[in-house]
Length: 543
View (cartoon, rainbow, N blue to C red):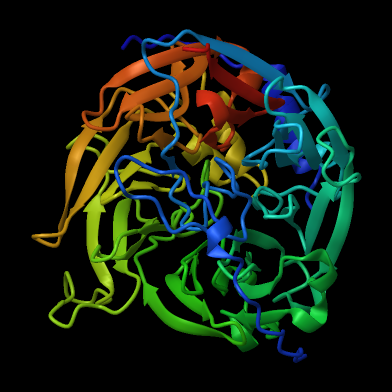
């Protein structure tokens, strides 16, 4: 694959950095026990590989209803995506006509009475461009945009993550509140957006500058969340029940939150979203350890904590210390080994699998000093045996017993490491300028018989520089926003072999940069992805 140098316009780079720098900125009653929604109405799409997570009846029954698609946060899909033989149309949807605004993730609705769907998401970036949008899935027409300026900006991912529930309500983690949005006219696809509820969490946060980062949906209809400074909580998803009396929280940092002698940097911090299983398990990774909590319908408690090696590396594309990935859950069928999967924070990143339930009785630590819960650690070199440094700031893609990681190691990261916190992620703005763009994708498999991990394949040439990947079981391809000779587009890598089999160019315009946004498989074989000014949709023509 040839690589050419495409310099990013300096005026754009300076404008984005200036824009970022300008934004520097008691006990509760136990909630009533909730009954899970009827499983008879839960319709997870069938998958030919049999590796679908259990259907969550509280989420919208659609192709993509939560960040990383579902509560397991696997980001893989049984839906078909674009194939090499398809003719693919590219549609750009500008959500922010002037300035920058990134929809990091988005959710697809259930069908409305007219048979159509909409796409919902929260847009984050400069304060004046933050808000919630609603787009017609079939045409890409913007139905409404509800501005929600926060007046501040940071490298935190607060506002990036959301879930779409069974009632068609978009629930967003916005700074210090949980906000619920829906149709102003229920059941009308073309209705404007209405804010239905805003639950202020200020009184349960660790410190005044704490903010909500991760969010997921539990299988009984409770919304689970985690804040940057380690407060984990649950609250009912229904707007009328989303009130302080029904809120339950725990703090990972405990008394250190109120201790002014403890510097903020010494507290355990969360910079990613969270995952959940069908038994009330909630999985949160901090800058120091992986946690599992459990909600039993009445009480929230910590089940286990396992330290992993973080290395203390932070800077450039890194959004926080420690792991750069939302925990993903592996093991969907009866008899499967069950793991929580993350990346660590060492200079040469490792993939880490941890037993998420009971550890096998005969299991021994993989090395002296390692937590017994760790099942394997694999150095990720993306096909370069001499490599000594690697970074991925994306959720780990999981399917069956396999995981896929993309490289986010930027040549400019060391220069940005000394910059203010809110400026560091902007090293990815210059991805079109070689040699800054990362190159590399790798698949690693868990082998149940030997109970070990091994590298299945690695491709050091493919560039998926800063977006969250997805994959289609039916097409057998991994999708993400890629770069070919300075041109952005949809890259498709064969899940079985690691060879790139598809590239659909979209534009060489710098605003096509995915900027940490997720590629997601929607209805009718389309792949949707966010960028610096909105969305790009890759639609296969009718076969």
